[in-house]
Image 1 (cartoon, rainbow, N blue to C red):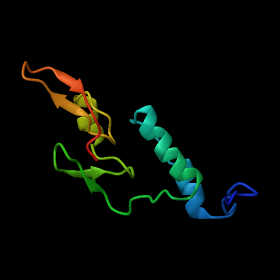
Image 2 (cartoon, helix red, strand yellow):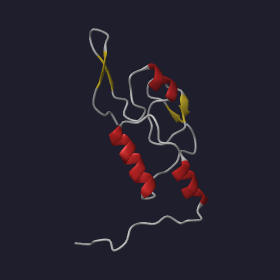
Image 3 (cartoon, rainbow, N blue to C red):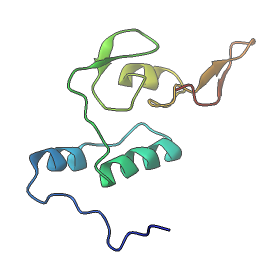
Image 4 (spheres, rainbow, N blue to C red):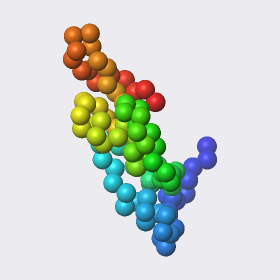
Length: 101
């Protein structure tokens, strides 16, 4: 019923907007990549002010917002950095499963 007459536009001289739009968006599956890009486009993206904790190694070394696994754990395991979608099977193999958080 309420339709937008024009698209959202960022403040062109904002330093925060420049920082958000220039931040890389890597290590994500297509679905999570699209979610983060939507947040950037509509100014819903909130960058981290302090490093967050990795859900696998429990170290505080995640610097990208909306990620749950650090770069080291994501390279070592078959996992996406945002979804933590790793399921270890009984035979010791690894399957990519559903989203945890």
